[in-house]
Image (cartoon, rainbow, N blue to C red):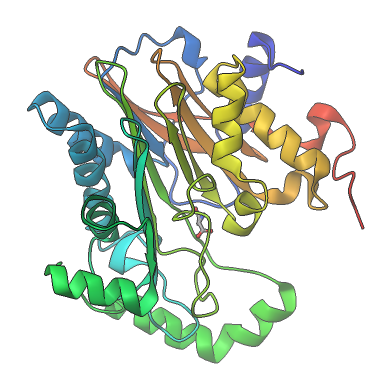
Length: 342
Ligand code: ASP
């Protein structure tokens, strides 16, 4: 099994700081070997630089004696509340009809419980609705109108179905870009907050929230609310979360794959890298999958990786809270890929 050596970490870091091909505004970040950072649980990691304030909120919850699920929910609510975040919450880019449809899920290692909602519009905090599905129903996932009726009945905070800023952008898109974007197969920026929590006692929790692919076909659901794709938590092993093109994560059950690789003994960093190698080897898209993973294990080890130049993720514990650069993978790392081209 190929491993990324310390030397490769160092040699890639100069390239990696140039940033990922799909992603939000990037921070100045370094790419230290996660094994060399002394991170003691409670430990929180999340996707992208916008995950840092979410991590900080989650840590504060834990230090106040809150539960692991409270930490996940309160952390992700910070990102969902940011009106300037164009890919999470109601500030997100709408679908092709001009309506923001949100996806989210939450998972508890203890009890192996999960809740999820997809294609929900008009509510500010899909992560909280997902938690309520988990805690008060016999179901795991609610979608669309049913999820909205459930949220309305439960009294969740409503919000506009699209922000004024995104509505104006959508109107421009409708006029100027639709035909062009379709022809080129392009899709506007999209990202996700996936946030993983390791409690001091080793219990693991996670959550995920996104507005998904901008200007998507109404009803499109990505990987984020799909357990095993955008998020997976196994209390015996650890947790993983994803961001990137959801269609590509889903076809490989990406987060489940990362957790299973950790179960086989891989460090979380190496599990993320190996998951991408495995996906790229068999996928017709090869390393153009545009997928990124974060992971942590019960021992308090963590890591991340992405296709291309990698991506940035936030790591928070009592002694530091930082944005780090993940290593990236290209075809140069393992030669020809995408073997199943048919
Ligand atoms: N994975 C998300 C989706 O496909 C978007 C992202 O994280 O970039 O909906």
